[in-house]
Image (cartoon, rainbow, N blue to C red):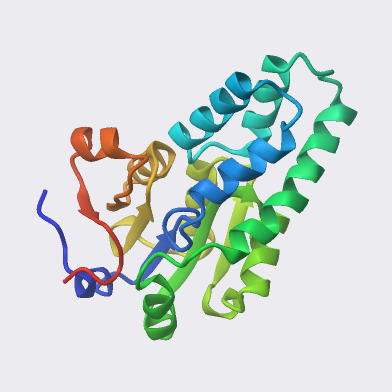
Amino acid sequence: MSNPKINEISKFKAVFFDFDGVIKDSIESKAHAFSYLFKDLSQELNQKIMNHHLANGGVSRFDKIPIYMKWAGKDLSQKNIINHLEKFSKISLNLVEASPWIPGSLEYIENNHMNQSLFIISATPQKDIQLIAQNLKIDKFFVYIAGSPLSKIELLSEQLTRNSINPSDAIMIGDSLEDYEAAIKNSVPFLLIKNKFNKSLQMNLDCNMLSNFVNK
């Protein structure tokens, strides 16, 4: 499909944003957080974890951390999984907040929140993504900020229903296969934000694409 202009996004009544890689350029920040969480592992296994994370940006940490713990031979008791999740949250919060904005994302949000209903649909745990938005002082711009453990398909469906939004009046903006599948399953148009980690999606998806929010 042809690339849209930014002003074409503003024609939709509702915009659903993923966060990492869409609002903040924070995909690698999360990778560094995983690396630090498993810093006691071999360099080879640590790199395997980082590579898996970067290749599966839209997958929740609730799914990733037990996988990485299993690779590392760690105790998979519920208590230990929760302990790893809590440690990861503490590590990642500051890294994500300090990461750069995707060019034009903040300006788009600030300039359009009065004319459109804006939402965040993230794989980050809900309490964490809400806290990040509060710390960045952008929470006031969004109708709702939704995070895991519900899937993005469920989160998007829930907000469409709760806010009586016709899917054709909304757009989902994401950078991962999970974002695309959430949009498709809910009959919502999808826009891919291109980056160096989703080149296979750029080649294989039939959807509109942009590198950032300043493309004309």
